[in-house]
Length: 81
Image (cartoon, rainbow, N blue to C red; front, side, top):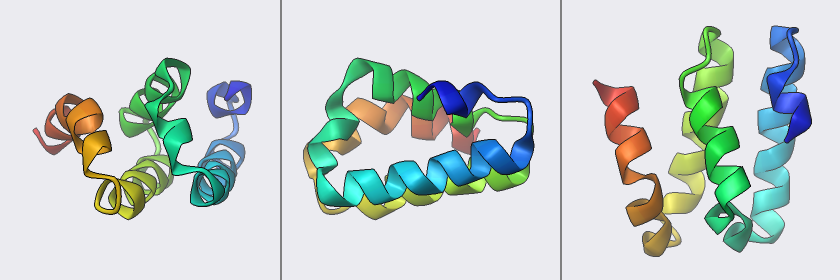
């Protein structure tokens, strides 16, 4: 999660993609508050590639775990707007 705050765009993008692989093994990790904050920060990132990686992560796992949709709903709506 600390890597998500790095200055380099490529590092933040890669961190989101790596996080997606971790979540693939244990989707329940997205329920953690620190994880929610980290993903939210990347949904609002200045870089398009980082935002895309965050949206891809959520899109991939929120659909298979509907209870996560409730936790990430406000973040997704904020991103859409």
